[in-house]
Length: 342
Image 1: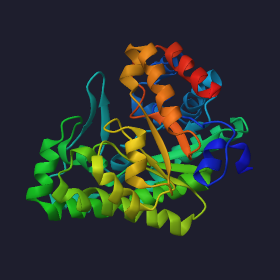
Image 2: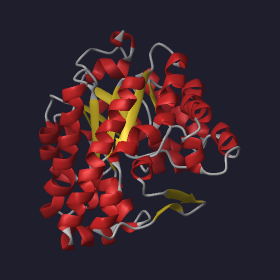
Image 3: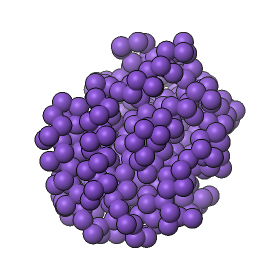
């Protein structure tokens, strides 16, 4: 029942006895048990596509910390991989893809492959759900079109000035690429729900890099298309939109998407976010993961401020971005203690 699951209760307008929490990249390299499993496979994508192992690492932080949400262990770049643009991960360097530079390459991308290629992800979900404690919500996710396109256009991550230049110089190329990414993402998210996911997060991690004049085209409109499609097919599955560090543009983003939840990055306080989006949406965020890793006393102080600011409001505690690999596991344990004491 949803009232036993604090995250679902929050996202569907219910009351919770405690502040629900989960953490982006809560299954990852900061955990020694994750590193042990990761060392048993040849590369990162092999772990994503091996259901038994992916399920194991999805469950590891739940067993260790008892947070309220289990986020599917996968990666946003399984979408280009499924479409037919091979993805590989280089140790200590990150993802590598052959750049998309032509409409001919985009035409070759095959949306119909999505469910077949990503069937192991559905199996992972099927393995995780029966093992979850009663209070834990199964969370699925996908990357938003702009964030996924950044890697597809540029071939690697982090600095995306080239992707923005392409968006300005070749808008038809980017529009055609979105016409592949959007239906593939919708199909992928629908598959996750059918496999047992109870709520979704749509990650637009690089939305903050987009200039104002391109924001509607590259961020708001394509995200809204995905949200509308999921709400049409699965109206009872809550969606959290997370467009990182977009400042005052958060108001229009939240209004146009119509998600039940909005994730907040580290470019504003939670009070500022509430003022921008109003009271009709659940906020999620936004402790700095780097602060949690390197300065625990200050991180716990900031956590108290966030909790106090969001008291008596629909709220899910999370980070402003993902857990960092050098975070000591005991720091997250200390944060969990603070959240549970509220």
